[in-house]
Image (cartoon, rainbow over all chains, first blue to last red; front, side):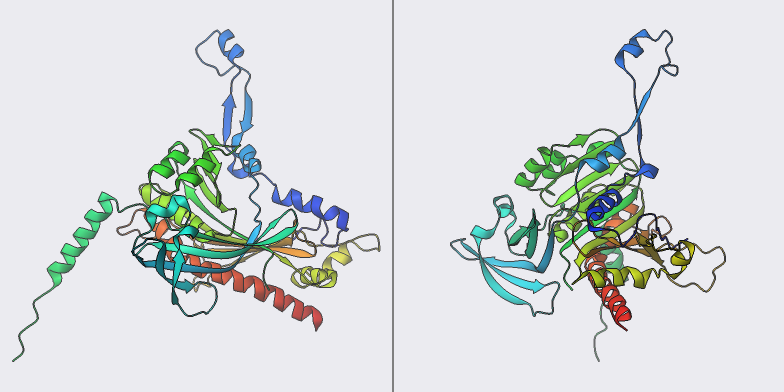
Length: 187
Length: 235
């Protein structure tokens, strides 16, 4: 059944009930994916006469269900614009980086710019090199009812090529090279 | 229409080893910077065990169970979320991933209470419910509606869709006169013919390639859904 309509709690509810009902909806645990973990009290284990613990009273907790409630994951911001940039080069003093920016959400033509290195987070400084990809984001952040404009520049992090990937690429290249023939000399 | 809040999450199903993925490991493999990793280590609810790994950084909340890996955005930098997910799967290419969900959700504020109700009435007409629950003391309202969209097949017998979209609409819990819209873009990995790539690599490749288009699709879908329902209500 692809359509699920529930009328137990109304869409047209009063304002004071609004938050309560919706909070319940968003804080539902994940019972179907819950992970059962058995916790055996140490005293009971000590008093167990045989080697199995099957007869020892057990307290079963669903850690996954607890974990799903432990962290609030509701969004608090919305992106206004995001640019994906690539570093073209650094100026000799290393105070600026020359970059090419491409807007991701609006039809703005790509353009080059110079960005001060002061705007790069300290943890990303070692990533700044020609060819490095970064994201420049302008967003509204709502904190306790107050909306604030913010921006952030962060560099993309990806793992290095694994040896397995390199082997596969080399094998592909070898196979491709094997299919190539020298171009016949023109008459 | 611009949402008041917008977020995303990526969920993979399969068989995982939660104890591997820790803030230290992510930092050592270059997927988290020093400051981000430190913040993740300081997570009040940090939990690392054989069954569960859970912590959060400045832009993500990570939860890894033995059968499910989910990464949820906290802030606005959703592209970093995608990169982190792709990076983890690239580092664990042998992981048997069976399915993937690329999810986007937003809270949209309507101009007034009438528009708010108009959307609920348009997607879930109340006629049937009013006849079932007559009387002035009975209210009928939409709390949650999920639509499943999947490709049409010429052979419906024994057909099971592998890729589909689930679109959900609810009242917003955080925006007054607002609606909560979400899209789950489900991709089946287990049924794909994996010629050369391993399942985790395939999942990483799908997320890497389709993230932007799925995000654009979700934004347009949410806007169109609101526009169409309001137009219908105003006719």
